[in-house]
Image 1 (cartoon, rainbow, N blue to C red):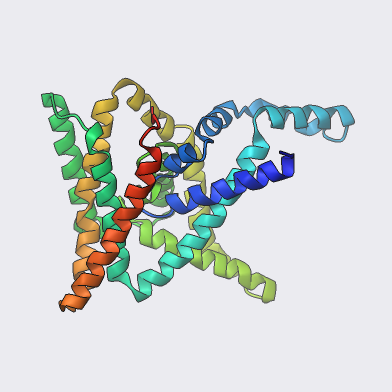
Image 2 (cartoon, rainbow, N blue to C red; image 1 turned 120 degrees about the vertical axis):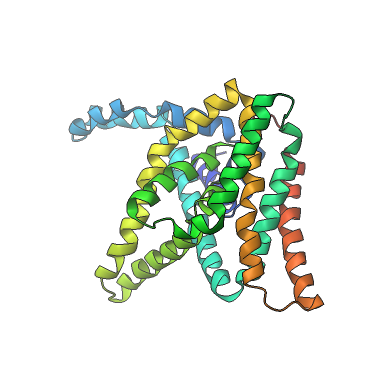
Length: 312
């Protein structure tokens, strides 16, 4: 396989990862496992070395350019760029679809999310252990925390750049951790709808520049996007590694906590479905249930492809 075709393949895999990370319940890390790039992704991330920047002042020389190119290849930067571009492409596209659905079909949208999250908790249930008092406490704490945060509190959290920065740092863990979606954490923190709307606003303003649009329209959503991106970048090297360490050292307790978060967070989509489904006719209820089942079926389908894969 030549380099161009390989990078195109990686780009397409990034699209699948990004699409998974953009919806609550499906993990981009799981998709990385399915497509066979998980270990390479982890290796590439841990190979990033800021010392490569020392070659920048020597780029005007042939030897400096060669050394810099060698350093980039050693860190697998072409792979990360192709994968990252695919992820961004998918996230922008899915965010736009979610933005449209949020306005036109909020009830079915959150019913779909309910199915995604509920099914994710179910397929991970066999990895939950409640055989010690400590793990029972962990499960209760996780459930209560998510239940409280995903209720009225989630609608009252600030949409400030600082909080978005923190949300980005937390959400990026879903890209590294198979089984838990980054979008799930955003939903739990009450930032999912806000960020999908902001990203759509940002891309619309960016596209409008080509036809003479105002640069000022980019500023407000741009600040939010940058804050999230910086938080995600920092989280990639901190929170994600912390979760991986916790899984390596306290796997059962960590998975118990994560799954209990999912169960507790079901409160939010349930409230959204109830508030946005005023029609209680059998057809309306049946439609909502069908969408929720479709979301659950998607997770079960992904799980079937990964049942023989070790997530550790």
